[in-house]
Image (cartoon, rainbow, N blue to C red; front, side):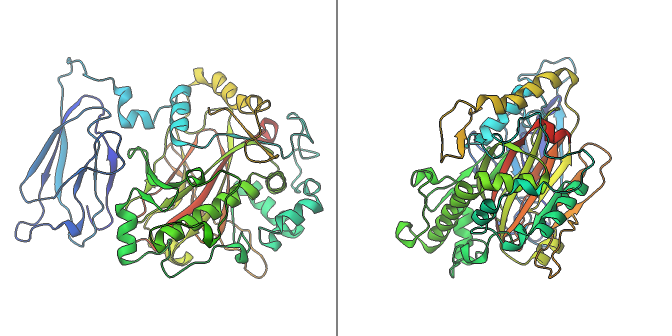
Length: 486
């Protein structure tokens, strides 16, 4: 392991492995120091942080029994310039010996599972927010209708977005994004590559005021506080499990009722300026989610850009801290018969060029997953279609446009004055696991990605040397079957 290298949390349970070992061969003359990183981290059950660290030491050997779902461990990022040299491996059971635990309970097999029940379990576990039924275009067109006059049409359905919709949206987003010529360019890009980045997305005057203790670019004691605490301000809490994800998640309900979030100074009751700023950003993104992203007007805006109607959505507000946080790819991608529109509002510390050239993680990555088993295709299609039907008779959740459901790159969109920038890189995949697309962190940028069956995504571990932290509001929208086919 050299500087920046790390190994995320896992349990080593693959096949017949019985014992894991690590033999350290770091320098003998100059003992390894904790400030250099590279320690072995041991995690207790149901914890997001390790409870024990083992420092590399010359000619020392660590051995532990492999237990599915229990022997969770990781290798801390190497911070120093010296390499962490070791030999690691496993001792296996005899071929005839029975395994003490089923392989399905291991961290690796759970992450790669394609079964409908496992996918539902992982989604329900990792999403604390429910699906929200959207009333953007449902009353205008039936699910079987299409937005285009013909499948060959490459013009955006501008008639979907009324002058009243544009007036509403102009209070939140940059006005040039509502111009017909800009919408046409965005639409063409989405047709060609299924992805784009819009920047600047929100009107600058609507953003929270940043103080001298920035959340996105912390230094000194502020950064130590961010890394050492499992909660921050009012509403931020660290989430796991660590073999799937680790980051801070914001829930406004821990402070006040949804729909009543305010970001005035009088509402902030935090112990430090860093806590206050974290809460200010959390409440701001909650307000953008509730008032803008789930509104009928924004759904019609998305339908105009993409030609796709969204029928349900869910959202999450996240803070990824450098030197600590990540989200791994789960499952084998979306089941056959399903599709999503992923929309992520990004805020990051540092400059865009630093993110594009640093190779220090923190980016969104879309990868090819193995195809789901054929016998599951029918029931997976029913699972997707149930999203729309299950929400029709539920109660209003946030406002009149929202109804709670069951709990169940280079992007070539540019203004002539270069006000829009890109942070996406497209690649041609050939095998499962290959990268389709990466989206770099940026400040005040909105990424739109159409994700179809067999595709999964992750957020790369954010290294300590990254330009800053990553703050986002990430949303996942289920789409109308007829539009997904088109």
